[in-house]
Structure formats: structure tokens, C-alpha cells
Length: 349
Image 1 (tube, rainbow, N blue to C red):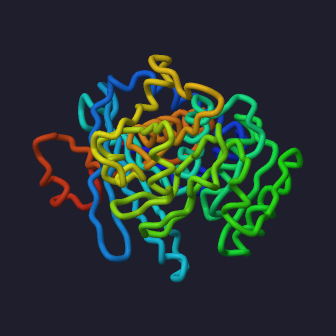
Image 2: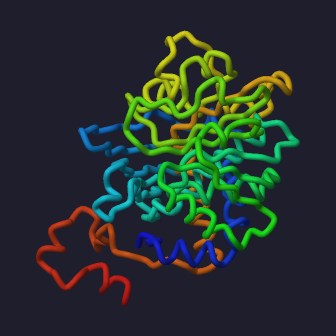
């Protein structure tokens, strides 16, 4: 039988441990997997693009587990009452190919993206960082804010969105974090100026410029986590040219990240090497660093394993008959002859 973890089950898991601890545990698991980066079978995600969005498959595997995520990105979905991003994923046993887990990954992806951002900022931002500019207050914003507040000690977030209701939503949802000050500002420039960290998390599928060089102070760490695809950008190319850039998986980031604006030989640095203490992050306190995050399958591998472990700990999820259980593994047709269900009779026996 295959374990199934749906949205209510993930919500209960988060409730069991708390939002901050859920992010903290996921970040720790992410750091462990990034340190064994070279053990994984990796490739860029497989994308199917349309005029309205993109649908992608994201696979990754080590010697024991295979994982994939199905995810979309459709910026116009909110007008239809649907999420911009929706996802689910699976884990399988490498030895047999048997799927051991099917899980929701829409909510979980928001957590894993925040965990990845926090992991990168721990490696790249100045240790004394206290102020973060937040440009765009959509579905990712609360998760990012909580991760940076609880894991990096951010005390003030200056938030801007072209949708005033989105900004109010962010402040309302974070009101219980009484040690985190949320300032709603009138422009992206006001959010970014003199901030220690700037997070951009826009979703429009457009060649946009959200952050320009004059908006960014020396020493700023830029956390570029907006929805990425070919032809979708957030950062001005001159800002990229003056920054030290870090990526998850360069072959994918060259296609989808902000670095698609740069020549193929422009130097970028692997985040996993910094996390693994094989390379330094920022060179000095005045340097601008950029984490050009596009989301990578290894992070979803970590998230699925993390969900699986928590579900076992708290006895969440359910078993489903996703794969036939046969009395004779060479006789699949027996299911047609006995539609009452071989699997159920075997389980009862």
C-alpha cells in the first residue's frame, strides 16, 4: 500500500510541531541533503509552456529514493479563484520502483521555498541583518517572513505590493508575531532602500524589472524567489553584473533564472558548495549577493522525505491501493476476472 498525505494531513503535521519549527526542521533537512549534493541524480525540470503558464515535472533521486513533483505556474489563475501554483509529488523505492508516498506539495512547496531561502541567507547575508524588504505579498510572503524572522533574526519587514489588499493580508496574517514589525510602504524602492536583505517574490510571467541597482545598498543580500521561467525576470541586468550570484543548479538556472539575461560564461556560484563549506559566500561586508532561486527538484525530494518522516512520527496520512497487489505477480489479468479486489482479500487474509 502507498501512503497518501493530503492537504488536511499536512496542516495537522504543521499544527503538531508549529509553523516556525516546521520550517526549522525542513531547513535542517535541506542543509543535510545539500551537503550530499553529489550523491543525487539530477537534471533540469521538464517544462511544458503555454501562453498562460507552465506545467513542469521535477525529478531527483539518490541510491534509495526517487522523487518527483508535478507543479504549475499560471499567474492569471487568481482571477478564476485558483492558486497561481499547485503541486503534488511522489516518493518511490529505488530498489523496486514501488511508490511509497503520494503527497500534496502546494502548501509544502511554500514551506520548502522559505526553507531554501533561509538556508541561502544564512550562508550569504551579513550575520547582523535585521531589516528585510519584501517586494510582492502573495502566497509566498508569510512563509518567507516567518523563516527570516525565526531563523535569521529579522526584526522589521518593509513590504510593498501593487495590490494594497495583499499587503494588508500579510500584516494581518503575521499579527501574532509580536516581535516582528511589518511596515507597509508605497513603493518597491522604499521597501528596498537600506535593507539588509531584499526578497522579491513576484509571479507575473513577464520580462520585468522589479529591482534596479540604485535601489540596492552595499552589502545587501537579494533573495530572488519569484516564479521563474524563460522570459521571466525580476532583477535589472546591471544589478546582476555588480553582484556575486549563487544558484541551485546552474543548467536549470541559466534557462529560467534572472541569469538568463547574462552571457553563458558569466560566473555564478553553486549554493551547495557554500552550504558544504567548500566555498565562501560573500567576500566582504559591502558586497551585494544574489540568490537567483528558481526552485530545484532536490528541495522537493527533501520536503517529501520530511513529510514522510513527520507522518510516521505523528501517525498521519492514510494508505491507498495505488498499485495492484497480486497473488501472482505475473497475472495482472486476475484483477479483471475478480473485480471485487484481490488487494482487499489479501489484506484480510
